[in-house]
Image (cartoon, rainbow, N blue to C red; front, side, top):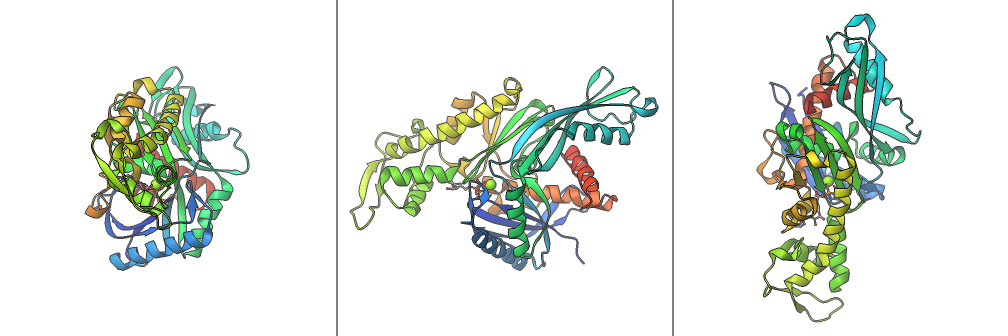
Length: 407
Ligand SMILES: Nc1ncnc2c1ncn2[C@@H]1O[C@H](COP(=O)(O)OP(=O)(O)OP(=O)(O)O)[C@@H](O)[C@H]1O
Ligand SMILES: [Mg+2]
């Protein structure tokens, strides 16, 4: 049977399934086929309607199967949602035999993750930040070093168990086994950031339909993760309410004429707004659209900036801010972000996945591309003898994969 990888991004606006073949040299994958289906089953990144979500997953997977000619049975699945939390932790162990072994590294990570995580939360990722051997800090790979004390700093990403269970249920009903649930902004980061950016310090913002995901890197490691329950859909409903126009028209107006800040709009530009319930269409200044959208976008960016501050490395993000997600396409977004974050801002695309179809080279598909990159690494770990399913085996494979990706 052909060795294929499947990634499934279940977003608030759309479900995207990518089917790919792992690259022979490892680490990457070439997309064989894909499917995208609009999804109405989620609110703010969380499943609220199982039927609608199952239908969207089925449709996206069926399309991906058709275009790739491959039958899909299992996938790496992405999860966003404001219930996801990141926390930093650290642990210390005594080194056995005077030299740090791989086993010591596992022990110290186990010690660091033994923080009180409530029973109703599930650990999604354990991301090592750095190790210290005796007084030597900032060690990335301590194996083989001489010392008596090993210390680890890690970042842990957890999710509310019930939300994850609903997502799993939706996949299973669509005849898809979720191999692993991955935090979506981390996947977006894998698809779009350069290693130098992660090294120098960078914040990634995935501004989607119902959520805004945040990941902050410094020294190659994840320092902070967060999700806000706000995204582009809120801009659309603000436009609908503000202009008293139906949601679908508000969405169309936002996509064609919306701006994140009026500083990019001329005074004489106008827009035609269709009326509701048989009322006449109206012509308004485009800046009115900006006046509705800007405060909400400002709110999203101000809350996100607060999260970036919490990382403790906000003052040393030499590579600035990278914006992905569908809403990053809104005109003026980069200008507004530069003003609020006081950082250089660039837009991100899923550039790190080889063979990504041209049509998907958009900021809304970074998460799907990153899930596939992660699946490619995970497959390699499996062939190295690490088993899926067993709790510890699974944990170790996760640690090693993300270490490889981010260190
Ligand atoms: N050109 C554009 N200008 C402004 N907004 C856009 C544009 N294109 C897409 N969007 C917005 O992007 C949002 C969808 O983005 P995306 O596909 O990244 O979300 P998602 O992954 O489905 O949702 P989430 O990640 O929040 O669960 C929608 O709100 C849509 O209106
Ligand atoms: Mg998304």
